[in-house]
Image (cartoon, rainbow, N blue to C red; front, side, top):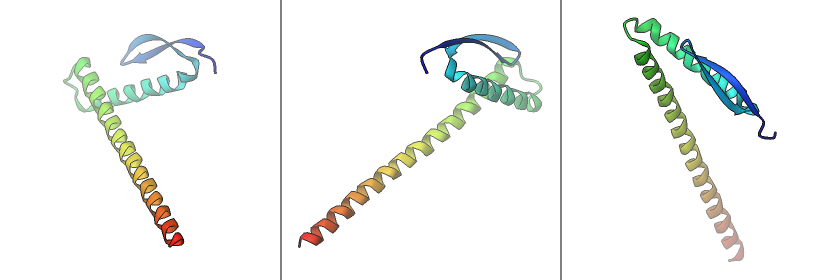
Length: 101
């Protein structure tokens, strides 16, 4: 996977954005655009009176909020994993200590 670049066009809310990306990241970019567009559609159905800027802002906020929640879960899982490792180390130490006494 060399750093081969690829030029793609992403359409978000009817506007086309040209991007130079790493070839191996294309699927991620297209999925991200799809997620944004789906969110925009959902907000447009609920908030008919809002303009594109408001809809895009609400979509960006909703996606950022979801990302924040995922990060919190990941951080909590890392912390729990570290606690388990410390607990295992203490248990191993105590077993070894009992064996030597």
